[in-house]
Length: 414
Image (cartoon, rainbow, N blue to C red; front, side, top):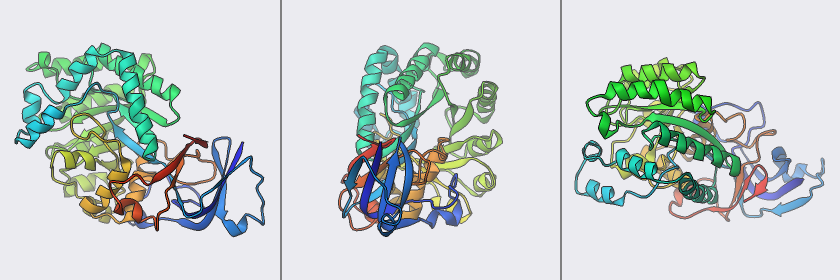
């Protein structure tokens, strides 16, 4: 089936030449668009696009036409860091934070990740699937078309595999592009306190082999930070994952200068995420690497943390991705439009840089930038049509309202 989207006010984030895998440094401020455009989609892929005046010279005979007069078309957002499979909310801890308790203090009392772990262990796979599927539907309505989902709220072999099986089922039943990450080392269970090395051994000897044997994970992740896992422990777990073909993605430097960024680069991690504590040494380590720095504005906002030095990172020549970190404890929102706004307001990114951060670069950070993240011939037809808006700068400007009118994934309207 051939679908033609015509009279597009402006087609945003197009690639007319050889598609790029990521945008780096000054490239992040470059955003190619076509005004008064058309977009042709066939068999789930982008077949052609260009100015409307060229459509008559090479006519397309569609099975379906969509008139986008006054509206813009963007590639779907790619949310490269979420914890979307979880059970229940944690608003009581939210109140604890307001009263002044720190992230580490709540964790030491058995809250935080341990709270979610208890709930996940008690929930059925069906309950976890139903809840996560609702969140995915919300993401689609807000413009997302690809998502990476981590485990990490299981903390036992059985519960981690349960989460990963839920993610596999979401892959099979959802129209989004979904990647799965084993985050066995998200925190240390209470019963392993004082015996953290034994928990690390369990992740290496049991969790990783079972996830690999069942084909449940695309990536492996470790929370390498102050109060969680050391660089040495992270080294061991990432090396174990590599033996099973699991490429690393690391939680790093959210709470301190932990060495996690340098660890990510050493292991050729696809991304290192959070990065509130990033200095000259960390930027130097990232330069020239294949690791995508990924900032999570929602978590920094919700926890009232320092902001990662994004402006300094881009000016040094790095690319930056941004993701929602949707989770029940520190970023309970899957809204990538809000992340786009935070990128501009809190991190002083230009709208063009922010759009690259939530599309092309976030696609790279989950290993799918050859498939999605821009409007390019041959890529999956994941895009959304906006409501009537004056310019692409309006997307981050008008925070708090949903600018998406219609969403298409693999060419099908959702």
